[in-house]
Amino acid sequence: MLISVQHIRHATSILTIHGKRILVDPMLSDVGKLSPVPLTRNYRRNPLTPLPVPLHIFEDVDAILLTHRHFDHWDKKAISVLNKNTPVFCQPRDQAFRAICWVLESNTSQ
Image (tube, rainbow, N blue to C red; front, side, top):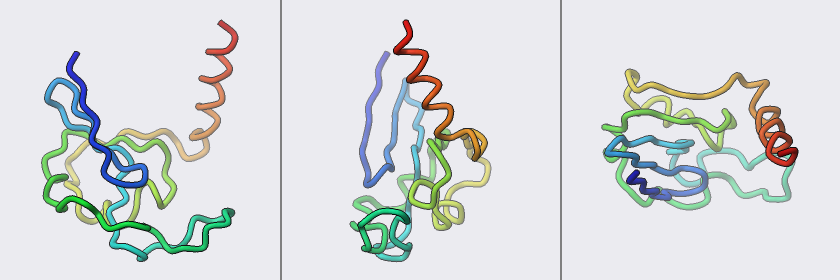
């Protein structure tokens, strides 16, 4: 299986699996347009770094994968610029971290 990972910034990456491009956790806003991450000691506005690639590279992705729906993983700019016909895969908001705990528990019990 041929897989490549292109890290863009923060949690945003593009996975390519057998020629299919999956955009993971797109935060596409300009530097400093978003508030700091709450409940952390980091008071700098997000994103912290400029987007290192042009927006048009996201036009032809085959799917979008959201690990969870916090603003630093799925922002308003991503919602506005990405193709509305691209499938989006995510879990219900109330299951995001609970599901991860279940996976960790099931792996440690084997």
